[in-house]
Image (cartoon, rainbow, N blue to C red; front, side, top):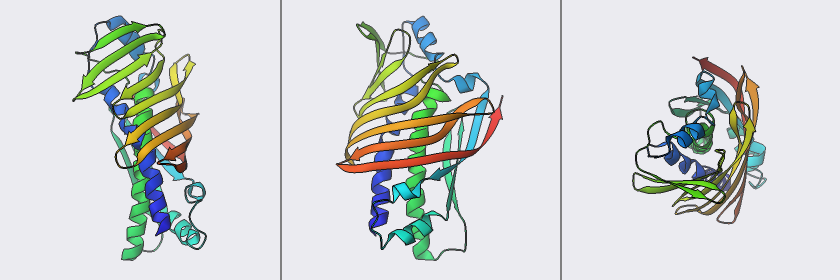
Length: 262
């Protein structure tokens, strides 16, 4: 069905850049421990503030996601979508899990397959976003132990290069620790950061990637956050861009936070 193809296409594109960031949280190396320590301490303020685990509900904006579905199929797609409920758990050790439940009468086989298709797509999308968000805001962007690396001075700041599991990683930073670009063979990510008294806050990111399955993907993600029990957490996430010339327009709402504190 057209609407199922559309959901899969949009979601595959939206998770591409989540796969670029985890390399940065892997073990690497440094010779300038003071700069690395200061850079590390400029991020991940939630863990330092005592947050061990966050749980929340996630509500996709189905009207936006399914906007291009043909009108004869749209009512059925919306009815199915509204039966899905999503939630996630993410902790300070880097564990991320996104799950769903189905409300209403027990579905038949065909409806179950359709719901599974939609649910899997949203779960992958939320996971991809959280993988991008967590290293900046919850877990850590630079690992505690670094072993093999090259740290260079450039006119615009400093550049950290290292190889992790055969993947070359480049992190460009200003001299006051603001990351301006992450590069891997998969593509580039340019985070948008806001400087606060508690450290840098991720407000969005731009990505440019050539994916073997999706094609050329360009993403512009905006993260609107709000204080919950004193912790700055995502409230609404907007993802726009294109995948192989197919427009992307995705919106996620995060509600009902339950926090575990130290």
